[in-house]
Structures are given as structure tokens and as C-alpha cells.
Image (tube, rainbow, N blue to C red):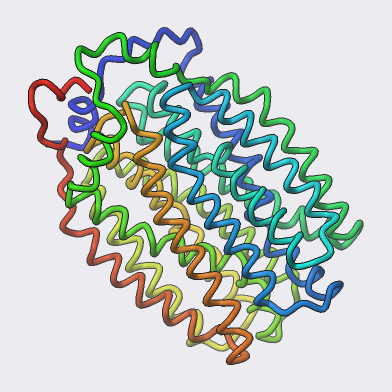
Length: 419
């Protein structure tokens, strides 16, 4: 059975009483992805000026970013459940306001504790309510089944464009105005998410439930999901994605400088990650409608391991760094379309935001572990090389973990099938 057929089988006929065309909904979701993904992906640019100003070690900055990943992950299932229950608009609005507040007060943080609370806790919880992961849930409900995988790919690509746009922008602003002013500028730019949230406004549960004879509740949905072997494998494999992305996002540019290259090479190499991920995400979303998603995921994780191994074994140079940025970008967030669409294939869209939220929590837990280890390992050994090799090993493991996933709707009784 094709992936497209799976989507049709697992999706209720949601008569989208939404008057907006799906193309407009996708565009709005993409713009939200650009805005919210941008400042977060540019946090690595802030590291060196912050450490220089406050005389902190890498472990302090890394711990704050680890907290951001952790609280983002902790908040995601709850934000998803709230969006499933009350609609996405309220959650997006609250999340955006928290994100803005976190960026603004971060600029006034002068101690490790205040920096942890602002860039870690506030921004982490804010991202759980306004990042593209929340938008994915809305698109899963608002976009027709045959457009869903591609919509996920487009949105992920848009987030990558935000990375491409904001990373060099952050480098320019930090150089011209300092990191404090740059955080304030980014906070002001995030205000643009608020009007866009209206266009990806998913219906509250009461409205969406009218077409279903039996309603599966949250606890039933969670028990069903975590008793399903393929979902557990998917969640476990996503841990590696978070580990790898967090480590590269926060420490890659510092690694480049410590390898003897100028900071601008790190800025532009990381910008290449963003621009090439546009192509990788689009291709991943397109392939997800034409071939097994588990194959796509296994290939991505294995290819990441190979690219990383070659990069750290070669002598550091501008060319090898740019090539690494381009290849890593092609594989960067291309895991998101197959992962998110597999959740829809297995369980349908009713609790899609929440169940994808738990998968994303595993992703963020991986990021938390990666950042906690990377800062400590760097301070203890004076090198990031052990972290690179651990990332490679996890990539190989996840390539194997995703292979046994069964891409079929979960077997349900007749009573609960509609839920």
C-alpha cells in the first residue's frame, strides 16, 4: 500500500469548514517557521561575544541552551494537547509572547542564573507554543491529506530559510550593534508571528469532534501510542536527530574558530546548512509520498554519520567547512516530514499535535543531552572531537532503529476506529 493511501486511510473526513485555501494556510505556516526558527538557530552566533563579555566557560552557555532544548521538549506535548483541545491560535499567541519576552529579557541577563531563566526556560517554553512543530499539528488538521507530506516539507524548508537568513544577519548585527541590541531586534521581529497565527487557526476539539461517533480520550491515545512498537522506535530514533542538531547549532561555529578559521567561515557555513536544508526538506517531503518513510529516515541518519566522519578526519579548511555545511544542510531537518507524517499514518490527526509533541520531546531530550555533554567534554578535554564521534555512533544506531518501523495504520476496534 502506498504512503498516500495510508494517509487517506488514517484521516477522518474533516470537512474543512475553513474558508481559507490550503495554499494560503501553508504560506502562513511557512512564514511562521521562518520567523521562529531564525533567532533560535542563530544562538550559536551569540556564544563567543557572551563568553567574552562575561568571562564564562563554554559549559555555562551550553547549559543554558540545553535548558532551552529541554523545556521546549517538555512543553511541546502539552502545547500540542492544548492545541488539539482548544485550537492552535491561542497556543501560538501565548507561545509567541513568551518567546518575545525571553529574547528581550535575555539581553539584560548578566549572571548564569538569569541567562538560564531567560534563554533557557522562557525561550524554551515559548518555542514549544510557537515553533513550526506546533504549526505542523495545525497543518495536519487543515491541509488535505494528499498535500500533507509536501506541506510538512515546505514548512521545514521555510524554517531552514530562516536559519539561512538569520545566521548571517545575527553575525552582522552582533558585529555592528552588539549582542544585547541584536536580541532586542530579533524580539521585535517576532511580533510578526501574531497576525500570521490567525491563518493557521485549527478548530478546537469540540468543533472537530462533531464528525466522530466515538471519541478517544487523551489517556487512551497515549496508551495506544506507547504500546505501538513502531511509534516507540520512531520516538527513540528521533533522539539522535536532536542530539546532532543541537550540538552543531550551538558549537559548530566555535569549533570552526578553534580549528584556526575565521568566524565568518562558521557563519556562512551554518547559513549553508539552512539554505541546503530547503532542498533536503522539500525532497524528503516529496519522497515521503512515493517511498517508505523508514527508508528515508535510515538513509538520512547513516548519511549524516558518514558526512561527519569525513569532515573531522580532513584537515580544517574553508572549503571542507563549506562542503560540510552544504551536505549537513541537505540532511538537517529532512527527518521532520517523514517522522511527522508517520505519526499521522499510524494514528490519524485527532491527537496528532500531542503525539508528534512526544516524538519531539525525545528529539529535544537528545538536544539536551548533547549540549550538556558537549560543554562539559569541551571544558574537560579542550576538544569537541569526542562529541563528533559520539554523534556518528548515534547516527548509525538510529539508521538501524528506523528500519523495522511498520508504516500502517494502527489496528483498532470498530468502536475506536473513527477516533
